[in-house]
Image (cartoon, rainbow, N blue to C red; front, side, top):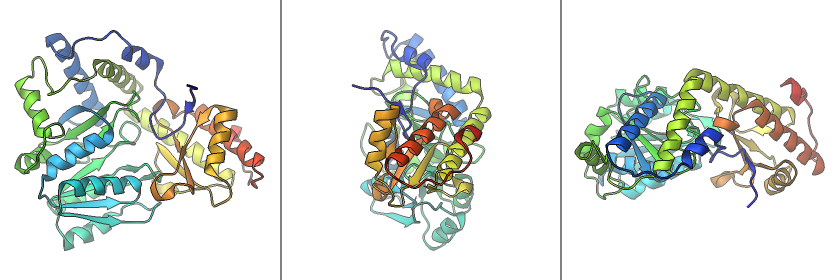
Length: 377
């Protein structure tokens, strides 16, 4: 199978050191020596999540983590409000409806963010136990103001749960400082390792709600994970077999992230994203997210009906060995997406994408609005 340079919103390219850690001979997933390594890795992970609360590594995708968190918080009868401004907000709603019949949704058009005033008005009319929102809506490249949304939730005694799958590790999200009770991410995006783990982080406030909920199930029941983390704490602090290789990869990646420094890392992602958006606009293309709340990790671009996304993808793969993503949900066919996370959040990566897009549009006879050269971006 041919290997392409991944400029998609996950999975992301992986540092060679991380790949080497992942490929070490297998060790047992239990025992005092391994458990000590695992717990040390969780402490590093808490530093990246910026929390003193609890963090679980669940084998599975980010959606598995969301399923576990939502079901554990709400049980079968909890009242939820989902804030949706794209395809992954709709997924939150779909997961939530699978657990409780008491789920409402507020939708705003693609490319807009969820405004705190909208949530304020909604909770005044209909209180909710849990409010759910994406931090970065991966389908549109919009970053939602979760700090302000959490403050609104606190005023109404609701708990905010955040889907941070495509943002945590690439955009500021200090969980404790912003008083976010619960969030979920996945390892294959800004954390920079292969797919395989969901990260579920929760505060004591969130756990109080989980303890009261009438949650069912076993594998995706966070009470199961909590029980084993305590009962088997010294030798097997989880209820199932986990991938030791992925934990070793995560440990190495976390060390690299913390060595770079979180603030430096966030600034790198923001600067590279700004270069990309400026270059796209120089080519006469429209970025879906307004500049003031555009994500530093993923950018969605409108075609305006001027060219076909699949033809652009084929050209970039054949001529530049690059893989970008098509649009998601209702935006499929009218947008394409570029991921710039972790190793791909570098100037040389996005300028190569811009060069390839420019050449592809020229080949398709699409009129290009030339601004400053790529070299000056």
